[in-house]
Length: 170
Image (cartoon, rainbow, N blue to C red; front, top):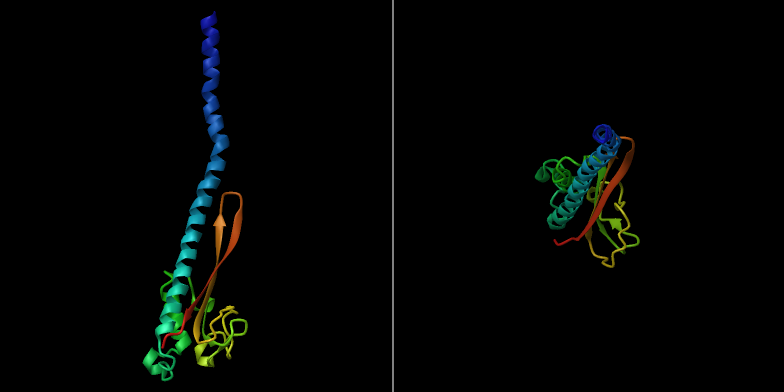
Protein backbone atom coordinates (compact mmCIF):
# COMPACT_ATOMS: atom_id res chain seq x y z
CA UNK A 1 0.00 0.00 0.00
CA UNK A 2 2.81 2.38 0.75
CA UNK A 3 4.24 1.74 -2.68
CA UNK A 4 1.03 2.96 -4.35
CA UNK A 5 0.98 6.16 -2.29
CA UNK A 6 4.50 7.01 -3.31
CA UNK A 7 3.74 6.42 -6.96
CA UNK A 8 0.68 8.63 -6.79
CA UNK A 9 2.63 11.45 -5.16
CA UNK A 10 5.44 11.12 -7.73
CA UNK A 11 2.90 11.18 -10.57
CA UNK A 12 1.23 14.31 -9.17
CA UNK A 13 4.51 16.27 -9.48
CA UNK A 14 5.00 15.45 -13.15
CA UNK A 15 2.55 18.12 -14.36
CA UNK A 16 3.98 20.76 -12.03
CA UNK A 17 6.98 21.39 -14.29
CA UNK A 18 4.72 22.18 -17.24
CA UNK A 19 2.62 24.57 -15.14
CA UNK A 20 5.73 26.30 -13.76
CA UNK A 21 7.16 26.66 -17.27
CA UNK A 22 3.86 28.12 -18.50
CA UNK A 23 3.98 30.67 -15.69
CA UNK A 24 7.62 31.64 -16.36
CA UNK A 25 7.39 31.73 -20.19
CA UNK A 26 5.81 35.23 -20.45
CA UNK A 27 8.49 36.66 -18.15
CA UNK A 28 11.26 35.03 -20.17
CA UNK A 29 9.68 36.28 -23.42
CA UNK A 30 9.50 39.85 -22.08
CA UNK A 31 13.12 39.74 -20.99
CA UNK A 32 14.34 38.26 -24.28
CA UNK A 33 12.40 40.73 -26.46
CA UNK A 34 13.41 43.66 -24.24
CA UNK A 35 17.08 42.69 -24.45
CA UNK A 36 16.84 42.25 -28.22
CA UNK A 37 15.12 45.58 -28.93
CA UNK A 38 17.28 47.35 -26.32
CA UNK A 39 20.39 45.98 -28.02
CA UNK A 40 19.18 47.21 -31.39
CA UNK A 41 18.52 50.69 -29.91
CA UNK A 42 22.00 50.70 -28.35
CA UNK A 43 23.53 49.79 -31.71
CA UNK A 44 21.66 52.69 -33.36
CA UNK A 45 22.83 55.05 -30.61
CA UNK A 46 26.42 54.01 -31.29
CA UNK A 47 25.84 54.52 -35.03
CA UNK A 48 24.60 58.09 -34.54
CA UNK A 49 27.40 58.89 -32.04
CA UNK A 50 29.95 57.69 -34.59
CA UNK A 51 28.25 59.58 -37.42
CA UNK A 52 28.22 62.87 -35.51
CA UNK A 53 31.89 62.55 -34.52
CA UNK A 54 33.00 61.65 -38.04
CA UNK A 55 30.97 64.48 -39.57
CA UNK A 56 32.48 67.00 -37.14
CA UNK A 57 36.01 65.76 -37.92
CA UNK A 58 35.29 65.85 -41.66
CA UNK A 59 33.82 69.36 -41.43
CA UNK A 60 36.89 70.55 -39.57
CA UNK A 61 39.06 69.63 -42.59
CA UNK A 62 36.86 70.98 -45.42
CA UNK A 63 38.00 74.45 -46.46
CA UNK A 64 35.56 77.18 -45.44
CA UNK A 65 35.08 78.50 -48.99
CA UNK A 66 35.47 75.20 -50.85
CA UNK A 67 31.76 74.98 -51.60
CA UNK A 68 31.18 78.64 -52.51
CA UNK A 69 30.92 77.29 -56.04
CA UNK A 70 28.52 74.41 -55.31
CA UNK A 71 29.56 72.59 -58.49
CA UNK A 72 32.79 71.72 -56.64
CA UNK A 73 30.78 69.97 -53.90
CA UNK A 74 28.25 67.95 -55.94
CA UNK A 75 25.64 70.71 -55.63
CA UNK A 76 25.92 70.99 -51.83
CA UNK A 77 26.77 73.97 -49.68
CA UNK A 78 29.50 73.49 -47.06
CA UNK A 79 26.97 72.55 -44.36
CA UNK A 80 24.98 70.25 -46.65
CA UNK A 81 28.18 68.43 -47.63
CA UNK A 82 29.05 67.74 -44.00
CA UNK A 83 25.44 66.74 -43.26
CA UNK A 84 25.42 64.26 -46.14
CA UNK A 85 28.53 62.59 -44.70
CA UNK A 86 26.81 62.25 -41.30
CA UNK A 87 23.81 60.55 -42.91
CA UNK A 88 26.05 58.29 -44.99
CA UNK A 89 28.15 57.19 -42.01
CA UNK A 90 25.15 56.42 -39.78
CA UNK A 91 24.46 53.00 -41.36
CA UNK A 92 20.88 54.03 -42.16
CA UNK A 93 20.12 55.30 -38.66
CA UNK A 94 19.74 58.95 -39.73
CA UNK A 95 17.89 60.98 -42.34
CA UNK A 96 18.83 64.47 -43.54
CA UNK A 97 16.02 66.12 -41.56
CA UNK A 98 17.49 64.91 -38.25
CA UNK A 99 21.00 66.28 -38.74
CA UNK A 100 22.15 69.82 -37.99
CA UNK A 101 25.59 71.09 -39.02
CA UNK A 102 27.06 74.54 -38.39
CA UNK A 103 30.44 76.24 -38.64
CA UNK A 104 30.32 78.66 -35.72
CA UNK A 105 32.50 81.20 -34.00
CA UNK A 106 32.18 83.36 -30.93
CA UNK A 107 31.79 82.55 -27.26
CA UNK A 108 30.40 79.17 -26.30
CA UNK A 109 27.37 80.72 -24.61
CA UNK A 110 26.41 82.59 -27.82
CA UNK A 111 27.89 80.94 -30.91
CA UNK A 112 26.96 82.31 -34.34
CA UNK A 113 27.26 80.55 -37.70
CA UNK A 114 29.84 82.03 -40.07
CA UNK A 115 27.22 82.44 -42.83
CA UNK A 116 23.91 81.01 -44.00
CA UNK A 117 25.73 78.47 -46.20
CA UNK A 118 27.62 77.23 -43.16
CA UNK A 119 24.58 76.08 -41.20
CA UNK A 120 21.66 73.79 -41.92
CA UNK A 121 19.51 75.42 -39.25
CA UNK A 122 18.80 78.56 -41.30
CA UNK A 123 20.06 82.13 -41.08
CA UNK A 124 23.19 82.25 -38.95
CA UNK A 125 21.80 80.00 -36.22
CA UNK A 126 24.07 77.48 -34.51
CA UNK A 127 22.93 73.90 -33.93
CA UNK A 128 23.25 74.28 -30.16
CA UNK A 129 24.90 76.35 -27.44
CA UNK A 130 28.15 74.47 -26.92
CA UNK A 131 29.57 76.36 -23.91
CA UNK A 132 33.01 76.02 -25.46
CA UNK A 133 35.87 78.04 -24.02
CA UNK A 134 37.26 78.33 -27.56
CA UNK A 135 35.99 81.40 -29.41
CA UNK A 136 37.61 80.44 -32.72
CA UNK A 137 35.76 78.68 -35.51
CA UNK A 138 34.46 75.22 -34.68
CA UNK A 139 32.17 72.68 -36.31
CA UNK A 140 28.98 71.66 -34.53
CA UNK A 141 27.07 68.53 -35.48
CA UNK A 142 23.84 67.55 -33.76
CA UNK A 143 21.89 64.41 -34.69
CA UNK A 144 18.73 62.81 -33.33
CA UNK A 145 16.24 60.05 -34.00
CA UNK A 146 13.44 58.27 -32.23
CA UNK A 147 13.45 54.57 -31.50
CA UNK A 148 11.36 52.08 -29.59
CA UNK A 149 12.21 49.42 -27.04
CA UNK A 150 9.53 46.76 -26.82
CA UNK A 151 8.72 43.85 -24.59
CA UNK A 152 5.66 41.62 -24.72
CA UNK A 153 3.44 43.77 -22.48
CA UNK A 154 5.03 47.23 -22.68
CA UNK A 155 6.73 49.55 -25.10
CA UNK A 156 9.05 52.48 -24.40
CA UNK A 157 9.78 55.34 -26.80
CA UNK A 158 13.42 56.43 -26.87
CA UNK A 159 14.91 59.71 -28.05
CA UNK A 160 18.44 59.07 -29.25
CA UNK A 161 20.67 62.09 -29.83
CA UNK A 162 24.32 62.99 -30.12
CA UNK A 163 26.33 66.19 -30.39
CA UNK A 164 29.90 66.67 -31.53
CA UNK A 165 32.23 69.64 -31.74
CA UNK A 166 35.53 69.85 -33.61
CA UNK A 167 37.92 72.76 -33.87
CA UNK A 168 38.03 74.11 -37.41
CA UNK A 169 41.50 73.42 -38.80
CA UNK A 170 41.76 75.18 -42.14
